[in-house]
Length: 288
Ligand code: NAD
Image (cartoon, rainbow, N blue to C red; front, side):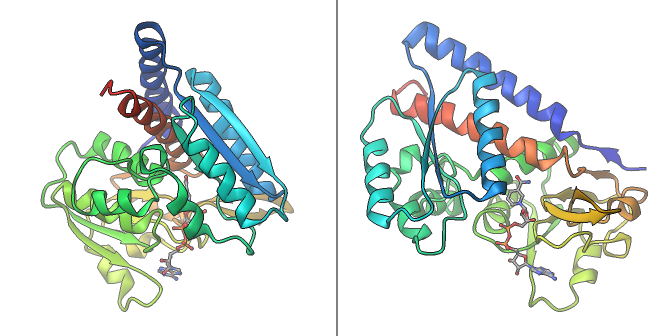
């Protein structure tokens, strides 16, 4: 049976590190790392994500300020809020919960966030910095995946890594991070041919698709490490249950290591958001 990479336990360790950094910043420099969270509309999943982020921030001593705009809010109103937050010296990180209602332009909003406050790491300048291997605010989910991978592979040099999914928030930044670790990286996606055999050749498989249980044991080489980013709600006996992109029951007996869903990548993402907020606070105050 595969080694279980426990995201709950690992994220608690990361949050503890954040908490001691925050304590030091407060005590020695009178800085309180502060995260502004912007939610537009009433999407129930987004509300849950925001609540989780705010709760974890509180636990780590990071100050969080929530801004809830109604679903009909205009681009100008949202842009003005971002501008105010950019200019507020008390705010170190800005997170706009995505997706936004369809009448709002996400790219415009992301580009409006000051790169130093872009704790999601989605601003084009941070994307470019990551692609060219310079220090930046790195997207939280791939950053969390790398912390998990380091638990099993302290040295990833020369490993074959396959990422399933090419989104801007997971697949592409994940590829950049694995390349930095000297992996041989392949991204496969909805148009890829022979996707199963490409995955079967991998030492590391990262699944970020959004299709419940797409990846089964036939896709995985015995002993490979499997990171499951997917979060899919499925119906089991009339009850709503969260499941990953990986068919855990069939893959766990043959993989070398695997992350569960829930309790895997999800908690790591939030921990890395707070890590980024603390880093942003230090950088903005020249305390790096
Ligand atoms: P996305 O929809 O932006 O991208 C999905 C990618 O999967 C696309 O690149 C597409 O080409 C590829 N794809 C679709 N069908 C495929 C198929 N049959 N075979 C191979 N590739 C296929 O999704 P995303 O934002 O990257 O999110 C992916 C999943 O990860 C979702 O379930 C999402 O909820 C989850 N997610 C989890 C976290 C977390 O913190 N755990 C964070 C972000 C996203």
